[in-house]
Image (cartoon, rainbow, N blue to C red):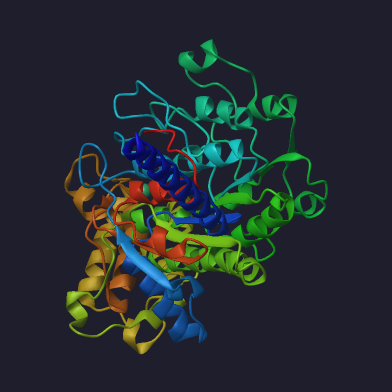
Length: 478
Ligand SMILES: [Zn+2]
């Protein structure tokens, strides 16, 4: 009997002790939980994209990119369920939900039998305010994975329909890719024009810089749709809205006692790298860094409550610092002479050809805009001249590839603009291996509350899973 009594007392003491421990743990957990989370995703921003942009900024602007120097850094793998080289949809889904999925899938599991819950949706349930910011259309893969669940990333109308259903407080991007139904599948489930649908669902649509600047009522649910965002930074008017403007207004709009989560995508770093346009990609990385600095200022005001994560969904283009022709040399400042994007150069070339301009005058203009011949390191030789001539012939014949040799030489891009930009990259010492994505791991950089835990992830899906843990939320996808 006495033995039993002793045993009972011991059990009670152990229970009290464990109870005290677990409540202590809870207190510690709450203390280490960020109130404000910024999730910066540089689409296609591998190590080379970030480092080359930083070196370029150091060389030409006597500055540097702040996100490069965050205190916690690591690398994450990006493979998807099906292979090593992912797309933004599958990688975004992993970053948003903690689960790997199939190619092109938005927020669903591999076989499309279940929808996944994103971090943004889970935090919304915890009363945090949510912002989704991108420099492309808001139904594009990376922003979409935070609020939508669709079998294919190309189902833009169906993705867009889910935006207002999320109830998130702040969307800012380039509007909808397909605001109206385009396929019979869309028409069968139509809710009409998506901007009208947003309004009916209680959203305020903003279109211009003035409208965004005059936004004061923080109770409003907002969809900022600025089609100018679609342009590359290098081609935009200087007074156009920037990603940094979106983040600045986002902070003002979302700040509240329950905290906020803001996903910010530098969307077009990827686009520029698909077309091997290093200068344009660098300008996009600089814009991404400027937006990051807005968040960093906020962190400096709230260091005990803020977490900033900067990472990428995958690498694009197989970009490298080093090109065989230059051996051990680089000449990044050569890029400063390129004044417009390859995309805009293509538009100009098509017009010149349509207006029957001579080959000589077209090649002169192309070299001017691409920055070739503009200093002694950029003089084009006979081999370059031959390549430009052949590309000109291919451009006039409107050869873009379709499986022919041109597809290998020019990807699926307009040959002359691509060749001019490629020659410039070679003279700068920048190499490319593919017109697609690559499967190399990408950097993750963090600062703030929970920073070490998140940066210790070694895979993209693990980042989101660590965030669920950090926030003390049971993983809704496990
Ligand atoms: Zn891409």
